Every structure is written in structure tokens, then in C-alpha cells.
Length: 283
Image (tube, rainbow, N blue to C red; front, side, top):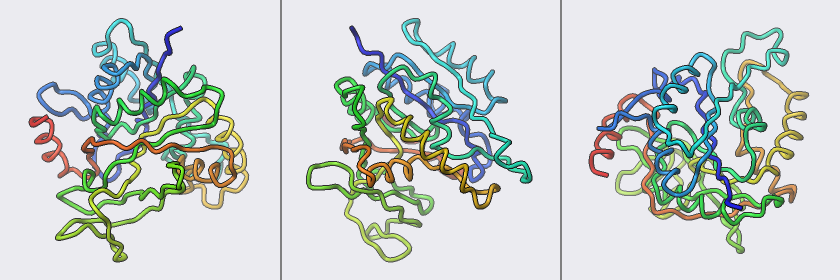
């Protein structure tokens, strides 16, 4: 039986630094969103089911655009990342509870092995192809996952500093951990605010994951613990990378590193738009 590959796209963020809902901003001659460019690359390598995690007020727009974009052999679902108001009865929280909670919101819509992306990151066809190849052969009953590793030099912004999750790789080629470095820039060399230096080929995670459905049991357990230990309900978030890192340390999962030659592009700040438009014209 042919494997149905699902791509989950996290598009419920508030885009506070960008100044607009970048999930619905369109770019390039094709007038598509970043997520839609990823979807087309995903279709070309075998993905046929797409799950968008969105804010409820954006659902109609997503539904209309996806209906017009996807071929007849593809399906899609729209999932709302709920605010879980009972967790902040005395707090006027307005933002979602983080990427780990976002993925849990999509649990019922994911039938098998799946990839996970951000809506505002343009990942490149090679990266999505590597992800598809992993998912096609991954044992659906195994907690062996994957993260696509980018060369840091292919992920930097010419306009501002960036934060990146630097990958540490174990001797067996698996992910050992991800360490966040802030304010990374490139002058004569690539360096962070604390003086750490990186080669162009240093691998970083850009939140392009491959999972079996075994990830949901891991997240369910950690989410239950998270909700019992919220210290500040106005800002606390349940982050997916932290949850995976903890599961690796607890020997509950392994994460393969899939190296890609793709150039990443994204729009963290409004002035990143020009660079993205230039990249789309040239590729």
C-alpha cells in the first residue's frame, strides 16, 4: 500500500516582530505565501496530505487559497490552536502556548508519518526531499525521528542578526542536542554575541522535523506536566524542541540528522522581504 505522507504547517503565530500576519503575505511572480511554496515542493516529492495549524480568524482565507492551490489528489485540514483558557483564568493571555502545544492540536488530523514546518520559513526542495525520503522508510511504530540540518552560512540574514539552534551530533550520526545562540551575524566570520565562532558548514536546526505518530505520546506526557507547573501564564510556552531534547535525554526517542544543501530564506523582520523577493526571482 502506498504511504500517505503528511506535512504539518504551523501557521498560528502572531508575527509580532514582522508587524503583519506574514503567514498570509504573498511573494514572487506566483504571488504565493512562503508556506505555499513549501507545499508545492512537498507535492513534487510525494506529500499528499497537508495540515495547517491556524488562528480561527484566518481559517477562511487559508481554506480559499488551499482549495485553489492543491491538485485533486491532495487533501488538507485546518486545525485551530486553542487558547486553553482554563490554564490562565486570571491572566489576559493573547498568544498561543508554543510549538509543542501547536503540534498536539493537530494530533487527530495526522494519520501516519509526517513532516513539520513553520509557515514563515522557505526550506528548499532538497531539504523537503530529504525529509520525504526519511518518512517513506521510517518505521511507523518506532520513536526514531529526524531533523533537517542546514549549514549556518546558508541561513543568515544580510539585514540583521539572527538566533540559531546549533546542532551537536553524536558519534552514530544522531542529534545529541541543540544549543541556542543569539545575535549571530557575519562580517569577516560568523559569530554570536557571546563571541562563539562558527564555520560556514556548522549545522543548525530550522525547525524542519520528521516524526512518526509516537511523538504524540511524548508530547501528551510532557504537556500534562507543563500545565501543572506554569509559573507565569502570560509568557510560558511549551516548546517542541525542548520537549524533543528532553525525550532524547530520557532515552525515549532518537533523532536522525538529515543534511541539506538547500538555502533557507525567511522573514523575521519587515526588511527581509526584499531579500526573499530577490531570492525567488533567481531560483
